[in-house]
Image (cartoon, rainbow, N blue to C red; front, side, top):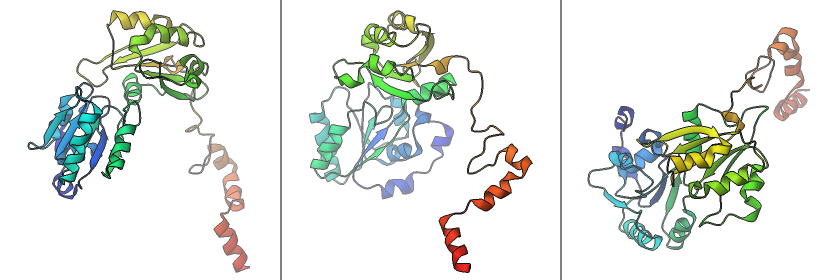
Length: 296
C-alpha cells in the first residue's frame, strides 16, 4: 500500500461496521487503485473472502492482523455462501473481494440473490474496471469527438453463452471503442468477426494482467491480434481494446473551446459582443417569472 493509504485512519470505521456482506471491487490489480471505501472495509472487516486467482495478495496488506482471510479460487458458490452467511449471523463483517468492478463479469448476481433469500444484508462497492485502467495506462480518451463516441464492453461466446443479438460481429458494425473481455482462448474467432467491420489496420491494445507486476501492454494492427496473443502465450486475464482512438488524434473537442458556451461559461464571442447580458435578461427560471408576476 502507498504511504497515503497507510496514513488513512480506520479505527472509527472498524467500530461502526455493521455485520453484513460487503461485495468490493478490487480494481484491476494495483493496490493503489482500490477505492478509499474499499480500503476502509478491508481494514475493518472480520472475514475476507477473495478470488486469489484474480486479485493480488498485496491488496490485503491493509487487512487486520486478526482478520480471517479465505481464498476462493478453488471453491464453489455452494462452499463460499455458507461461510458468508454463518459469519454475518455470528455478528461479523464480511468482505467478498472481486477483481475489477463487480458490475462486470463478476458473477455476483447469484450471490446477491442467495444472500437476499437468506435475509443477509449486503452492499456493493464499485471498483475500477480493466478498460478504465488500460485507457489510463495508454494515455488515451476512448470517446474522441468527431471520431468515436461509443464504448462497447463485451466478450465472445465461450463457456458462457452470449445472446445472438450481442454477437461480436454485430457489435463490431458500430466501429466503436470496443473493449473485449474474457476472449483470449477464442481470439482467432474473435479477430475474424471483428475484421468483418473494422479495417485490418485498426489498432488493438492487448493488455495482460493490468496492475500486476508482470503486466504487459502492446499495440498491434487488428490483423495481428491473434498472432500476438499466441506469441505471448496469453490465455487469461487479458483485455483487448479495439478503437480508432488509439490512432494519433488531430483536433480538439468543443467543450473548452473559447467559442463554446454552456451553463457555466459564456463564449468569448458572447463576451466581446455584449450578447451575454441580453441572454441573461431573457432567460429566467420559473421561480423568477413567478416572483416578477407577484411583484407586478
